[in-house]
Image (cartoon, rainbow, N blue to C red; front, side, top):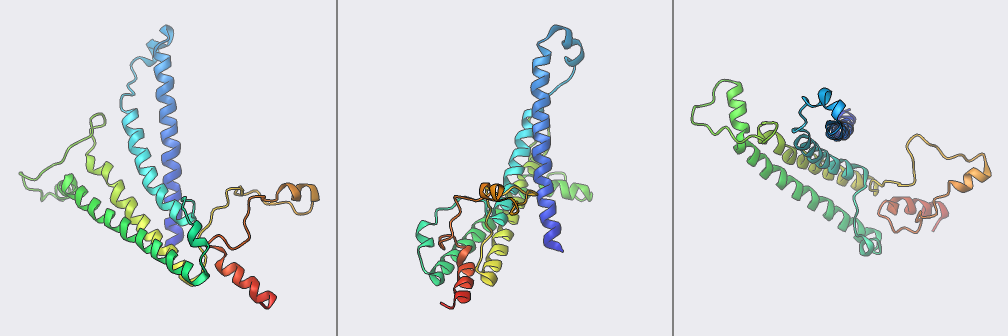
Length: 233
């Protein structure tokens, strides 16, 4: 239940940030060109989009950090695994677990250091001030140039996104230890579009000519071992 809610929140946040940033950029560009037209300037000249670039940069940073965590969960990150895929299943599994735990350690460290930086950059003042216990000499922290937002809000993407990545690495590692499979993204599959096996011509078009079924992908460890058992090898 918790994992499904977290997955939904993660996907919703990424989709919202992407859609909102695209909309704001489009509106800002249209405003800039409309301001150069004399008969439209009277209508759009009073609008101020000076904040648009800064806001979109912030949104893309947040989108990238949480998108990286999404990539760990769905297996869409690029990795060089030619040597590892040539190893036997046992050694391959050890290297995969080591890589996942190393990723969890790295992102956990970044989350910890990032959290400390955010706390000292003004988050502690905002929290203490909210409860009315902030001393007068406490450091308030800087603000962004255009939006004048506290920068600790912007930088919070680092500890939050890295902590989520750390959780995803641990989650994938536990799943791999249980099933022997890693999440794998099929770039040829379109969500909601199922293959048509009733029409021979359509079925032939749906063949993934780039699919490898020779055990070269870590996901195929359990898959191919199951095939061997069925064949009695």
